[in-house]
Image (cartoon, rainbow over all chains, first blue to last red; front, side, top):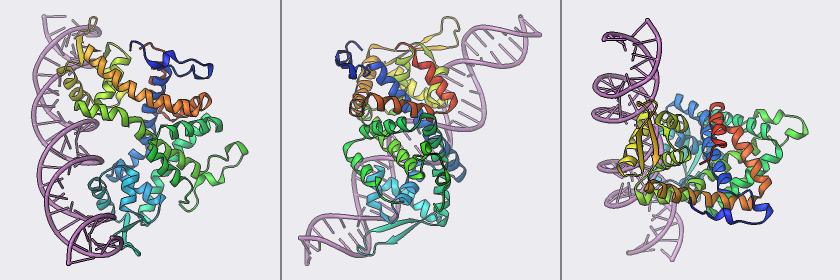
Length: 169
Length: 169
DNA sequence: ATTTTATGTCAGCCTTGTTGACATTCCAAG
DNA sequence: CTTGGAATGTCAACAAGGCTGACATAAAAT
């Protein structure tokens, strides 16, 4: 490691930015993400689905009637990848694709009753994990958690995240 | 979504645990993880490697001389998956595998000079992102961030994370 | 009338995960 | 010494879910 930048940082309120501290944060992020996805993964597995299906269900539920292009931007994958997932969800009757009213090229996506049921099971499992973590850490920690995560996002993604924030599900 | 559980939670210090708050946390986690991996991913791509290689390099660097079994437990993958990644890293001269001294069945893993160089580039890119996020959020937020992440881990993983915490790299 | 946009689809490739089977090496217990 | 089991490595086959490229269609925009 020779001499990394942070060892030369001065100022008492910046002293916590040692490489060691940063590495702990990196590893915490890695391990925590495993926990974050573990519970939904188990449910998905029972239904023969993967994380890609979960993400699609989540954001379709989040923004009812969203278009395919919107979804692509949120998920950060190619239309071919998304389409494969979306096709199975539509075939299985979890998602409905309606031709757009104003622009008939677009497809507006909705969860069916069955889709809502699965989405609820998945998000409830994930919320339960998050709820337990929030309780254990306390309100102040949660605020800090959100601040750091937000600062870690790419600029464009942060904008999309922010614009999602105030919508109603 | 009808009526989810958390709406019945009472007590003033638990009011922040609404489904809406939890969902924001879930989405923050999802988007932040994208940012978290984005910079190393670009470097890995130039070298023809993937995230699996990054993880292996990270933990071999983290715990010099670790055995394959230790690594398996940390990474949470099968030995076949790890072995494929490890084999290419060894072939490419980034990782050295030495027969164990006390137990000759074991293999002790080390980074070569070239391996350390790549690991340093990867972790420096990731640390830089983390450093910027930490600076933007401030020390108090960082403490909360770590608390929530730690509470989100599976118990066994949290123990492994904790036992990694105090070692020297 | 032409171009652009939104979407879907086919084909093929890669990484990275999985299971199952099997070989080798070597420590340790009988 | 022999045998059992643990640690490791390897081969084969498969699946999820990314990717690119090419092409088709419908509809909006120019």
